[in-house]
Image 1 (tube, rainbow over the protein chains, first blue to last red):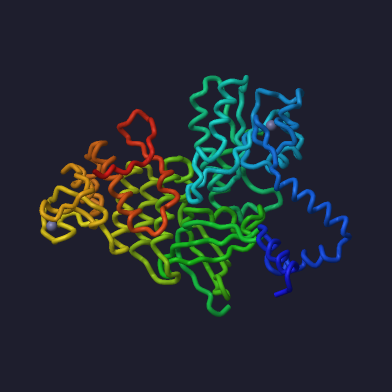
Image 2: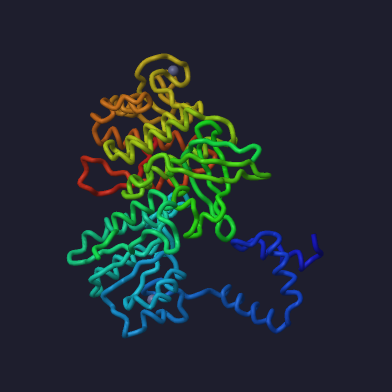
Length: 198
Length: 261
Ligand SMILES: [Zn+2]
Ligand SMILES: [Zn+2]
């Protein structure tokens, strides 16, 4: 145990995801030896976060204004919506530079064990958008794990009722750089059912 | 390596650990509940792949660690999980089953073969899709409660032990109550509901599947109320279970608990 504020800093850092006690100590001492201006800047950013980050009224992405940069961009196709779990997934899809439509951030995945059902996510907002806007396609890009798959299953069921709406699921299959023989049954099964003609 | 052991189990739930690892809670055949670390499982290149996702039925090899055991090898026994995540109703029902099992076993490493078989049987029945999910859940919950030693008394009075079909049910009393022992606040299930509860507890599927929607709804409420009464904390997944009878118009309704008088 260190004295006073140093230990407080280590404790706070240790509560962050992926930071164990050793890492917390390392980061704390890094900060102690940093330029005070750097620390002030970090503290200012944290202060702004504490004041409240804004979320886009339309899509739920983190935003600096009422609407996020993507929703404000006239060049983005308004008729295609890519549904993701978190804002970080928006960034991941954006990095591909393949997608020209807009997003909808659910705020997580359906996870009964954590008490998350449809009402805890931005499902109703998605349905309202599809009902009112000129949306013709929804791309479901939830995580390729149990909760993400179950969320996709649920979305497919509720979106079925919209006439003329195309619903697609991000193809998921074998990771690049891996060997086929090491693929598990679930992943290989998905890759098979999602195969495409060449 | 010394201390290495193998077992077959079902993944009850997973927790993130650090950057790329997960803590996997398994219900195993021989070692009961086991919490173990799967290193690097969240990386796309992990050799574990999706085998250690919730509901996975797997053969695992583990070595005992200082605090948690570590999973070294995994093989899938069957793909029951695929049939559970392809349907939202099955997914929520399976979640309630695994959460209940996790909560019923407090001691790790103690064999709970009977509960393991109940969980596996229920998940298989759900994945198969032939039985009503609501009946599968209630049958599991009743039998899991019997395993825990607090099945509701159904064919005798919970107070005085008098055998017979009694009129009242009270979770506080622990089941059905005869006319003499009946207390205020008891509910009065129909004879059909009582017959359904008995059938579910004993796995009598012919009787269970012949039951009507009213009896199913009431049985469902009684089972949920009885379970919650005995659990220290509320189950998170139970209110999120999608209950939808085969005979309904496809509309969903949330799980209901009958109001006491
Ligand atoms: Zn937006
Ligand atoms: Zn009595």
